[in-house]
Length: 122
Image 1 (cartoon, one colour):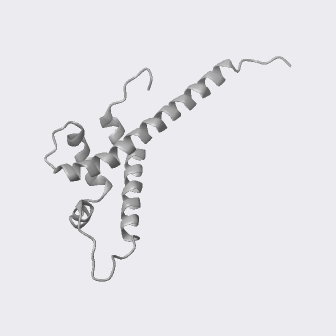
Image 2 (cartoon, rainbow, N blue to C red):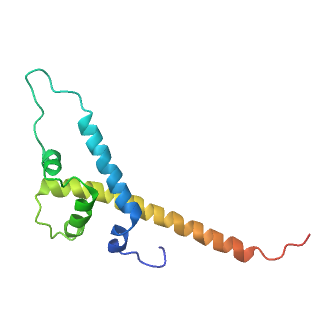
Image 3 (cartoon, rainbow, N blue to C red):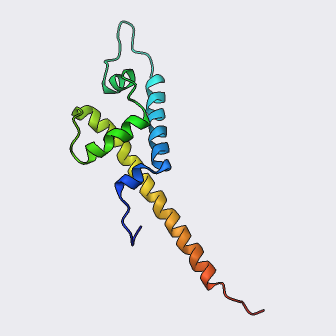
């Protein structure tokens, strides 16, 4: 990646990017389901996570469909929903780039080791 540019559109198509977003959303859902009950006579205020969940939009596929427009500042979504999607996808982007750099480094090292592995004297 140091010599060639990786486009965001390529990263969005990467399986790891999708998996990272899926895990992040699963973690959000788990934390929301495991929060302690509101006190007697009280209830939690509905927020944007609830609205995304009820609209069946709290999933990786929806986030991946929306993120290009958000990153290009062309999204028509409200700022609260944009910030939720952007936070999850930015983390996934950084993690995916880090993984791709690591894979590239390992491939380079493997190539270097195989090239330098000429006949060794006994």
